[in-house]
Amino acid sequence: MTAGAIERLGELANQDTWLAHRGRFLDVTFLVEVGQTSYLIRIHRGRIEGIDKGPLVMPRWTFALRASEEAWSTFWTAVPPPGFHDLIAMLKVRALRIEGDQHPFMANLRYFKDLLALPRARSGGAR
Amino acid sequence: MSSNSQADFEPIVGRYLRLAIGGKPHRLYVEEAGKGIPLLCLHTAGADSRQYRALFNDRETLERFRVIAFDLPWHGKSSPPAGWQKGEYKLTWRAYVDAIMAVVDALDLDRPVVIGCSIGGRVVLHLALEHAKRFRALIGLESGAHADPYYDLGWLHRPDVHGGEVCGGLVSGLIAPTAPEADRWETIWHYMQGGPGVFKGDLHYYTSDGDVRARVAGIDTGVCPLYFLTGEYDYSCTPADTRDLAGRIKGAHVTIMEGLGHFPVSEDPPRFLGYLRPVLEQIRARDAQS
Image (tube, rainbow over all chains, first blue to last red; front, side):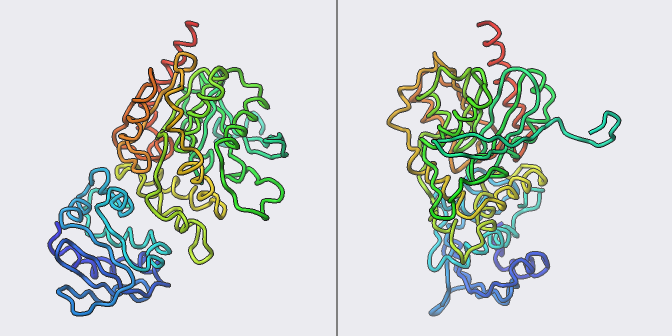
């Protein structure tokens, strides 16, 4: 489930016109760490403009979301167990670390929750 | 409303109640339906009594219970007190208990059952400590003796972050992933409608002022029975938190609810009512014997 999940994020996100609309005031570059692998994701007006897979040389980002491969993999299951069903839940159980300037993340919290949940296996459990 | 009206009204009737709380005049919105043992419902932080819409429409409950809910001051259709604009809203355990007892007295409720969720699940502990004899039974949903904040509460009230968006965004994950979509989003909508700083002010009670860990061992369930029901997906008050609380109170009943989160009454009402009805029946049967 984890392999390729972030790589597919651009296509999944940009197909979702309502998600892009809700993020229309959002311009940000953020880092997602899946275990040992880093991804630098650039968002412009709610659409993903590019995703650079690590290793990255001198990456610049506004905020970072870091979790183990196992944690993301559990988060992306169709009906995740308690604690892994939501980004803030993962924060509470210390499976996710959020670093940097969290303002764009918090001001667009539903956007980022929905964005990162896009690779989740479909079973009606989407939020 | 004429008798031949075809309008599809629910059995709920809402009215505005004028009363004094802590010596100050207040105007509170109160809803009720059904007949029988008074069952007073307390909503969660940053929300309002619409959360109980399914219970208010549950025919089985309405045949035996007079279901009543009110919006706390600052919440739903209740007003904040005059002068609200001059200071920060911060709920304290004393103000919360005062509001509940003022409503109980104003409505002349005879030993009601109280059911409360989240902050309401906490305050039943304060009611058990302060006024146990005034209640037939207390039901705490998502009850813990204390909650540590797991995010910076400052995000909930600042002009450069939309309060409705961030409150809705924060609580969305407290709902179980299996909740029906319509009820999930109705629950989130209530949070999006809260006044600026109200959710944060309620969490002052939930995370700080309402810490009741040092006192809960003094609760006497022989005077007033105490029931706890907590959803497995709740990470604000986890099943472990509730079990820890119940372990400190002799005679407290605990049920962990599968497939439910922090808003059982609102996020998946049919599933929740399956857990609640046996508890209400137990309370009713015990009351009939006494």
